[in-house]
Length: 171
Image (cartoon, rainbow, N blue to C red; front, side, top):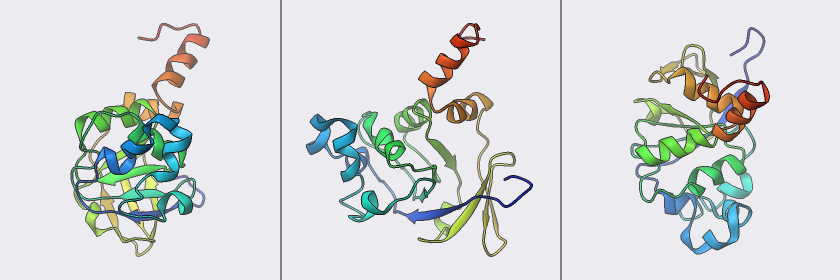
C-alpha cells in the first residue's frame, strides 16, 4: 500500500481444488492463450472471463492450480488482468508457473474469510490483506526474488531487463 490511497481490488471467491483444466480448459488448448482466456473458469464461474477487470483478485480454497502442469492455466489469469490469487495452498507446479509468468500468489490460511465482491487492499511490504471493515489477514512470506519476478512481469521480462542493464542473469 502506498502512503496515499491504497488500490482496492475486487475479490472473486472460488472454492477448493480449482484445477488447471478449469483455468485453461483442454478443449481450447489448440487456440493459444487468446482463445483459452475467454473460457477461464467457465465451468465454475461462467461469467468470470467476460466480467473480471484488470486488478481484480481471486480468493480460493486450498489446492488452487492442482492438475496438469499446463502453463496456460496461469497465463489465462495473467491475460485477463488478475492481480493476485489468494489461497491457503497451491499446487507446486502452478505456483512456479504463476510466478514465472508474473502472477502474484499469496498463501493465506484465512483466505476463506474473503467474500465474493468485497474490495481489499494488498500490502506487499507487510504481506497483508486489508479489508474494508478494518480487518487484516496475514499472508505467508514470499522470497524477494519471486516478488521481483512479479514486479518485472515474469521471468522472461526479468531476465531481459537484467541483460539490457548489462548484468548477468544470475546477478
